Image (cartoon, rainbow, N blue to C red; front, top):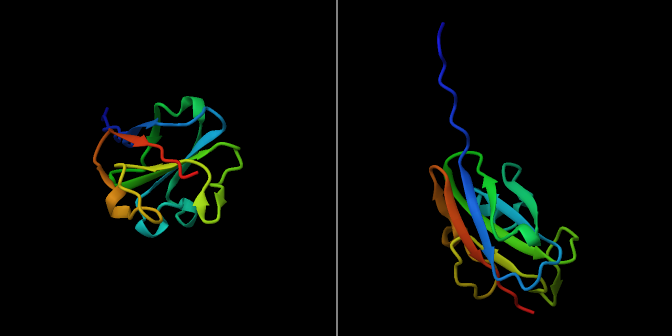
Length: 131
């Protein structure tokens, strides 16, 4: 009888989101290794996309596909329409990024928001609101 080693489960990222202005709607989460697809995962088929109820966003887990360099973008989708609403190019809903990079004009670079995943890890993300 031979025993085969079980493959290790994929790493998980323990995410905590702080600074939500209310508990309405959901938080849209995008986890990607693709710098060209950051912060909008729509162009990355390998990205991990999920929605978390705003009331549950203080702490949740995201399963990473494997080890690598990732970045996370989150949007507080207050009206649950599955997109970020804007007004004259400014986001009307809150947003945040892994490593909480400084936001000037437009989203941060993948490099400023990226972090290495070699095993289970955690990220704390502070929400920002422009309007």
